[in-house]
Length: 204
Image (tube, rainbow, N blue to C red):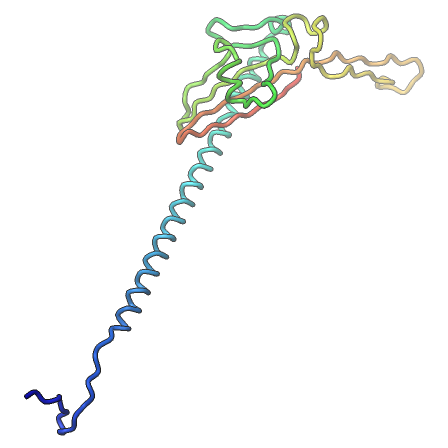
């Protein structure tokens, strides 16, 4: 016949089964800490991706300056008569002597790929950051031709002066010729599918 366990002093001790409460609490805390660590790692990874994408986007925007500067140099180096008609062939800079605008609700990217003639787009070699710069130059007139004879040609207002350099009587009023507006649209595509559009409007 079995006897109940007794202590070393000879007294009987009550039987206390192991419940494992501490082990259960430790497992719960371990699971919570694991989930928190995973959430932190994912948050840091997402932040790094966002920061990287913003850096690529900023780099693409900075690269657009090259297209704008090349377009400005072309306009400054061309005679007024040479800009009356479009240039869509040859090895030089391409140019459109008429205006094109996206339709209502149409994005510039869709307009670029579907409406602008491919022969009018100028593409520069990829830069050190891996960005490819393409630009197109529009003269802001409805049609080709000399600006004064073209309907709805965007030009600066005629500047008239009420006096000359002196304040004497009978001075001749100064009359400045109007300048024509040109729009340079630059499209930059870079790493991680970054895409940026930059527009510059100048008068000459």
